[in-house]
Amino acid sequence: MPLTGELEHLPIVDVIQLINSTRKSGTLFVYSRKGEGQLVFDNGYIVGASHSNEKLRIGQILLEAGIISKEDLDKALAAQKAAGENRKPLISTLLEDCGMSKEAAFKSLETLIEMTVVEMISWTRGIFSFDVDNISVTDDYRYLPEQIQKQATFDSQMVLMDALRIYDEKVYAGEIEVVDEPLDQIPEHLDQHPEEEEEPEELILSDEILGLADLDKIERKKPRAFRSLEAFDPSEIHRQIIKKALPGLPAESHTEIADFLSELSSPSLADEVTLKTASQSQAIVMYAKDELLQHAVMTVCKREGIMVFTTSDEQDLEVLISRALEKQLDPILVFDYPTAAENAFDKETLIATRRHIKEKNPRSAIIQLCSSADYDFSLHSLRDGIRTVFPKPLHSERHDKFTSDMIDFLKSFQAYIQGCFNDERRQQFAKLRNSLSKLKSLHKAPDISLAVLNFVGEIFDRSLTFIVDKNALIAERSIGIRGNKLDGPSAPLKFRVPVREDSVLSSVICQGEAYFGAASDSQIKEALFPEIGAPVDSKILLLPMVCNGRVITLTYADFGDRQACQVPIDYIDFFSGQAGLTMENALFRKKMDKN
Image 1: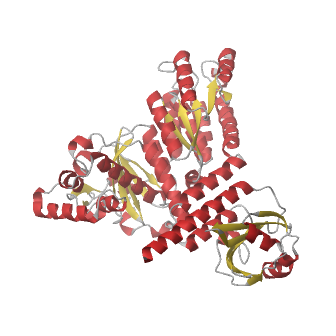
Image 2: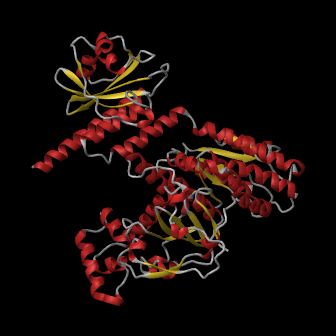
Image 3: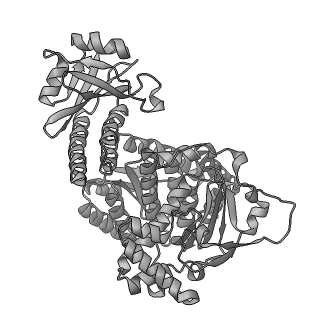
């Protein structure tokens, strides 16, 4: 019987991490009212994907990524049409007839898988089934020639990391709307009929359903599991892992630990956790062989919306760290304690690995787990520059108290890791970095101006953009002034505020420098506050955006109904400066297009 469940209880992010951590092979079928798709796994690695979204076609992906030209695509499609029944997959045709490189072919398949996962992340309702007896990559997913296909295995954690980043960017850009899908809108053909025992109907996957319009047609059968789908119980996974890791532990201890982990992985947190994970600026990379420890820490981190990746291989550890840094995620490394248990790390090897990683990544924080009785190892770790030494429960040392020790350890680890990830300055920097990344993709003046308003609006309670005219400011879009801040930017307000030469407004416009201080200027009190209302605290921000040597917009912000607090003025000013440069590029590009 396949592993089956509902996305409401176990979101797709958790399903993929579960398959990866248990190193399972098979095909994951996912159905939602928004579409349907498949991911194919081999030993926990993703090796293939398909999706009903017509935009996710391999030819379209190659074209949008600039890997091939429209002429190359047309040429390959014509060659396929001429070959008739003997036609080869699209990528094979592009490789042989259009000069596409093997690296580009490999990258295109990775992009296809990432975008398939991005689509699935937004599905909050639906059903899934993981069929361990069905690995159809060799026959059904022949995107690449056989010699390249053997190499086309993608680390599920890396794919997930990229997909979550892309998902977050699409949500920010409004390309994906996060809504709670009603239960009664699951497609009728996915409705469950436990009383029916008929054979599962055969479904032909067309080119359109696959999202790969130019590949050979394939067939597959819808898993029988959906005929008698039972709600998936995540607590069963906890019990299985605990039983496997500690077979000698009493049954009541298994239950106590499993209940605690089940409480941490409460289904009500699923949607919130997925979204929080997508916007994190850090990730935990864990180096351990203890499967129970890996699973327990992963459960804690999911509760906090923290991405966590685990490995017991030093080479994989370096790859995980490198990829995290490439994706602008600061890795916090967690090293397991070396014990005498079979297949565990020995001290000499672990210390050497830790030093090697520290030398290559001197800025990365390392948390070392240890035995509370191993005094020498703890001090040795601190001398090596470890951020902290964290006591780990060991069944071999305190078997009579192991259950309570494990629960206390997880509670303490949860509290500690919250502090690591909730550092205010780090979070502010993450917002700056993410906003700068999105700014790069903007090419229109209104979008760039709105990006500044949104950035300021995340920090202040009220914000408003003004267009700088000759002798006045013209009110544009605002956040939190004529409505709730959560409603986002409003329509243009259009009122005008005159600019006197002796005012702070004139000073900011002339000098092009931000002002953060008391609203003591009489012009602001007499001309602006009657339009928007005066804030409780007089401290305000006036942020100019300079383009081609002059201020073209001025963003006003205050704290609304609450007292003022410390804000990262340096980050705000830097972002506005980058926005001004982006505006210059956009205007120059527009001028060149006209010529």
